[in-house]
Length: 339
Image (tube, rainbow, N blue to C red):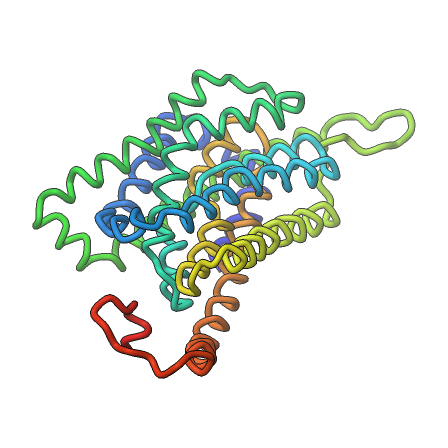
């Protein structure tokens, strides 16, 4: 509801609200704080459970940071440079810090896979994301690799490292665990502020395009956005997300990954983090619309799919048990088998 209100207000009021976007340093600080608060409740010690068998997390990371950008590259050809650039940026950023683990756990999956994917993609995005942007949108927008890498280090690596350093203090770690809900609400408010600023920047762009004189043929400006464009971007981002999720699900099944880790691969391999995408889209001067629609789509789609997987889990476990001889309980059996 807040997104539905802030986007049109930001776009429509852009001529008057544009001065708010002049404080680039404050915008960077906001992203830094939100990323740190997102990372603070996450005990990255959990990843030790996944390091023993890293293939699920590696598969999901490959889909997230290689598969999705390639799909988006093909899809972006149907869009203008303004929207296409935004779609590429949405596709090349890392997995979200919090919701991938939350949705994996909601679906009955192994959230340690999602946490390891988050760590891998956020650490590698400092180099992988600029490389993809140069290759895929270098002909659309001007990309300065050095400043982009420095920015990703500041807004991705540093807040995560600081949050984990603070967690070494037991009182801070316990406080973060007990105040997850308050931290989540604070992060959501920060994200909404970034969406509002992005909507203002998009509104300035649209007002500028609308003020340009029409060509002699009466054609619209190349970066004009119509209602049909918005619908098409929404369908593209939802389609890319679903393709990535399906690829993770079936690839995990074909390689013998157990169902809890399979769920983690499907969800974490297809999700993207909104905060970084908004910041990069605004800094590169492209539309935030693909990033916002991808984020809203993954929240709605993954909720429905996660609930379906959670309800089907007992049936899957019962079916698996019926195909085997009576199970022998042992200390090495996985938790779901012992249960």
